Length: 234
Image 1 (tube, rainbow, N blue to C red):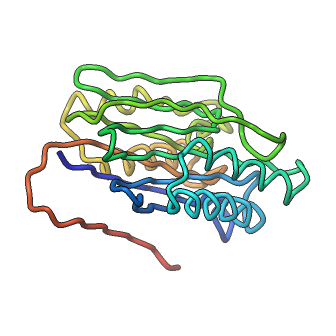
Image 2 (cartoon, rainbow, N blue to C red):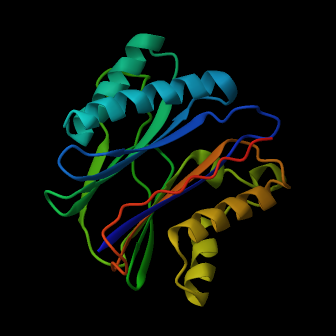
């Protein structure tokens, strides 16, 4: 099998900096974790918050701390640093090679999209942001690694796209159209969702938007690990 991770993100219109942060880290016992955080509000202040959260989680994961414990520690850290006045959402997707599972850790009220062969689901659960209360616990689920598994997480800027003009983003409909016509790559999925959101916001995103797609495919190449990053500079 082969794990592919894709990210697409953009700033809120007229904001010089995104309040979302995405990072990928190798796990000490094998595998990868991708961490996505969205700081409250937007701009530089939100970026400081999301950076703080992601750095804390990655540092703990790198030391072998379990995902749930890392998320709780990041929440308590943010609560202490900002005295419960600032929140952030947090998603951690971890490929755990020891258990051959995908561990999903969430403190994000936005839904999660789960694609398995022949099935497309939008999963909404009672997941609370971190930083407002002490000892905020994440929701944790674990799925076996199998070919065809795709998980999509995103910040709330995606689901809020279009609401300003009365036409809300329908993530499932957008995905169904793609999956009916083809077998899109993770990057094609992320790019298509982001493009649709920007179109609904008339080219002026009303919030920061970040999309992470993790997909399990059959291995077709060698054993070399690769990563590609694109960073536009105005």
